[in-house]
Length: 160
Image (cartoon, rainbow, N blue to C red):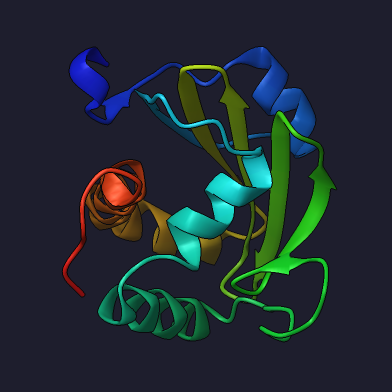
């Protein structure tokens, strides 16, 4: 994670515990350095809600395809439809369940100089495993782009 670029990081035991999913079948972690000091929830909002219109449209379409039960987008206690399970200045935990057969948690930690993200997935059905196994590689690339856009948002104008 040199020079602020988004890089892969190990998912911490703390993130796994905060997710509250047992067992965890899939995990991915990314992080970046930053001079910005935002709360974890503010970072989550910048990453998901601050994404470009086309990125948000792709996310919402994919989530609908997977049967993700999103909260109403204008309701309190959610970030782009993901329910907030925990939010304090350093950590936010977002949760969804997909009808396709998996439960998902995003655990975002904001510390001075560093932001880390962990995504943890529990396969609730065989279909969930099959779907996520095919979906994961594209998701990783897409999410790195979201993180990079959010990282740069405070430093330069971003095209939509």
